[in-house]
Length: 202
Ligand SMILES: C[S@@+](CC[C@H](N)C(=O)[O-])C[C@H]1O[C@@H](n2cnc3c(N)ncnc32)[C@H](O)[C@@H]1O
Image (cartoon, rainbow, N blue to C red; front, side):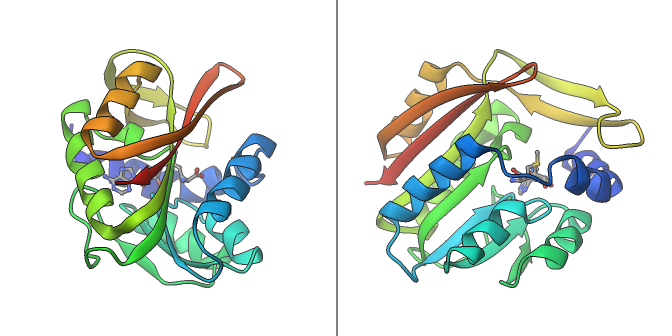
């Protein structure tokens, strides 16, 4: 199965995903406030893998200027209902943005859909589009291994590819990608364990 399969899965569940994940969890709001403390007021932010636009809309409610980018046109259509900023359909491994043009990249629960072998490429692209000292927030699920998983959580059954990481594994990838680690937190939501990394581009 391929990237097209993942894209089609998100196109199919976009409305259900938006409903189920409508509320931004409190720990994510805390991280988003910390992120805004690093990016300067009014600076341009990219919500990478913005999905249905929940976090993008929150950043806009705080006065930030945000571009949203996602693989799935269905998810971007949902984001259009919530957020004002530009929306761009793109794969995070090949970003159509100029070098150094963002002061912050917010990437919540999205890089976990790439095969682990592709994560360094996505991090390199993210580093390229950040200005020096710009912030990268990354949230992934804790665990080991990777593969396709079936879910009915958002309506019709679909399959998504997941790669899960140990904290030290993702820390090593970030360091290799020339990011400085500012903060690392972990939290649980139901059966999912999340690892949140706040970093800056060297
Ligand atoms: C679990 S959702 C998270 C959405 C949003 N960030 C949130 O936290 O609600 C994952 C999102 O990543 C997107 N995605 C998956 N692979 C991607 C890729 N290679 N490039 C860009 N976006 C991707 C999916 O289309 C989906 O919208």
